[in-house]
Amino acid sequence: MKKTKPTTESCPCGGGSYETCCGPYHAGKPAPTAEALMRSRYSAYVLGLEDYLLATWHPDTRPAALELEQDPARWLGLEVKQHDQVSGEHATVTFVARHKVGGRAFRLHEHSRFQRIDGRWFYLDGDTLS
Image (cartoon, rainbow, N blue to C red):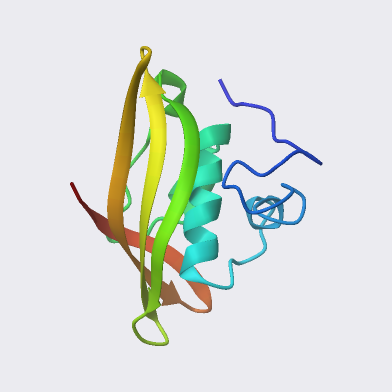
């Protein structure tokens, strides 16, 4: 089930109001940085926006589907640890995303790689950190 997008509420990524933070990217505006794309992808997970997640995933590593309706995770917060612009077309973002599944708390600590193609950033892949 797709969740309802907030309007004037706080953005799930913690970057301000949804209307001025991730909302424009979910509506089609290209994210200006890899960090902005990563934040919008986190918000898309929270909101169940599978189409957006797939559209912003690099074509070489994109899965066929995500099946978010079957994902029992409840996302609790995002902390961006580091954003590095490696080159004009490549960047990395290290983050921690907290969530709960079945009442048990988890944290995803990832070093993600992004690539810009034709002016748009895409999530390429990532390494899970301990």
